[in-house]
Image (cartoon, rainbow, N blue to C red):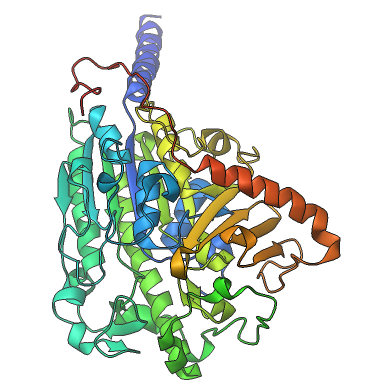
Amino acid sequence: MLRSFFFAATILALICGSDCQHAAHAAEPLNVVFIISDDLNTRLGCYGDPDVKTPNIDRLAAKGVRFERAYCQFPLCGPSRNSMLTGLYPDSTGILRNHELFRQTIPSHHSLPQLFRLHGYFAARLGKLYHYHVPRSVGTNGDDDPGSWELELNPAGCDRMLEEPEIFSLTPGSFGGTPSWLASTRAESEHTDAMLASDAQWVLERAARPGHRPTFLAVGFYRPHTPYVAPRKYFDGYELSSMPIDRSVDLDQSDLPKAATESRRAFENKFTSELRRQAVQAYYASATFMDAQVGKVLDAIEANGLSDRTIIVFTSDHGYHLGDHQLWQKMSLFEQGARVPLIIAGPGISEGGVSKSPVGLVDLYPTLASLCSVPLIDSVQGQDLTPLLRDPTQPGRGYALSQVTRANNAMGYSLRTERFRYTQWNGGDLGSELYDHDNDPEELTNVVDDPRYQTDVTRLKQQLAKAVTDTLPSSGTRPEITNPLPWLPDLTNP
């Protein structure tokens, strides 16, 4: 009987101790690991692409919610990243081109990582989060915002320091804005993105130490941005002759407004079929190389025991054309230009869920604040995606809005609902577009003038006007706030 008593008491103590430890663990602040790729479209395994190998992004999707219809707010690095990191649409940030910072237009607004800093988080940036001129700015702070971070690491690997003379470019000597590529013979560890993954492992090891503050770690990988440089083994994983080229090469563009395809660049005339295949192979190789670095970050989260108290985000700054609509790169309002991968995983988030509600990168700011119980300080315009992360079948806002500029300050706005994409150029004065994704997922036929869709056009025109109005700056002042944590700096006097 005595032996039975001690055995029962031991089991009870273990159970109580486990419960107490679990409760204490659950009360700890959540970390955030924010991973962003550069110029990555949704040609990924978890998004149904049969060609591109992305096993690590795919395994993250299996652990969290994958947003099927996620969109940037401006298909260009600088405006998109400023919008995402402020929770405001480009019309409110005032950033409509590269090499501009929100501190120049809305200096008192708090960036997403700055908000976390003000609530006790250690915020670290590795690589590209705000705009960088790639590859020239690699290894520098680029157009960074110093107030966002406590730690900034800017490694520069062989792809920046050694290999540029070896890189092929459609326009010799031009890399950042022109398709250019190299199958590198140097070790993977010598490349910038691999260095960023190693730096992330270092930060995560310290984040797991007892007593360390909660961490907001942002990792900005450069690939697959041009130049498409990756170790040769990643090129070897793709058979050149099987690379898809110009999926809509015979597209009839007579039904499109001129502004729709004004992102077309002169270098595209230099493409031959062989060069297109090489460029696609290089883009895929760069994406798979970047995916391998994502895997190293995910492994470090697990190895350091951080999985059950870390929110993980993976996304890109905008989409990317690889010959679709006879276009290359970005700056379009077609699906391929505006759509981005978006995966969020972590405690309390549905595993393997797929949300089909249209969402935007602007939604990440309020969502991460909500998930981590960080009170918002400034007014933001994104929607909180937490209900969709708990239950991916929830409808959400029901639309995403993207915009882009054209010559003579012309502006295009595009509204993406679950079924339709409706686009206006200068309020319709320069033309409009309507695509029915139920019947035309590649957006090959503009049906804006089709009599069968006029009821839809009328409704979407009104919805677009309301959505655009909601992107404009508020006329009010910042709301009164109180400091929720007295030991932190005075939040009313940033």
